[in-house]
Image 1 (cartoon, rainbow, N blue to C red):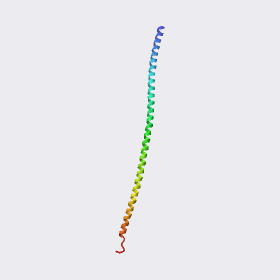
Image 2 (cartoon, rainbow, N blue to C red; image 1 turned 180 degrees about the vertical axis):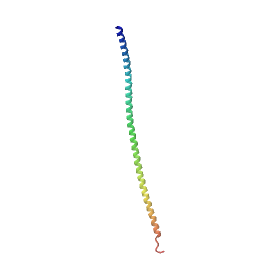
Image 3 (tube, rainbow, N blue to C red; image 1 turned 120 degrees about the vertical axis):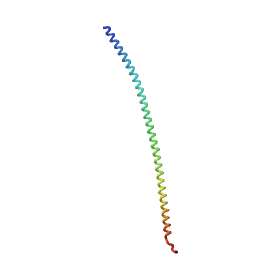
Length: 111
């Protein structure tokens, strides 16, 4: 009977040692996972900040592109006005040249 109790005690001691070992491993694993979680949270926050910075950069580039586009539109309108004005001047010259042609065709009274 004493031998049986001693065997049970040894068995229980082995189980307790094994449980303590497993508990220690689980504590280490928990600590490691907490560190990984903290790192992941920091990385997530850094990505969010980076995303905000990226979004701001995209907005800034879009604003710059808009300003450039508006400048090009203004210059093209000005160029078109100059082109129309030049075409009107050429039309006036053409009309004057036609008039000269007609004046040359008019017979002189004395001849």
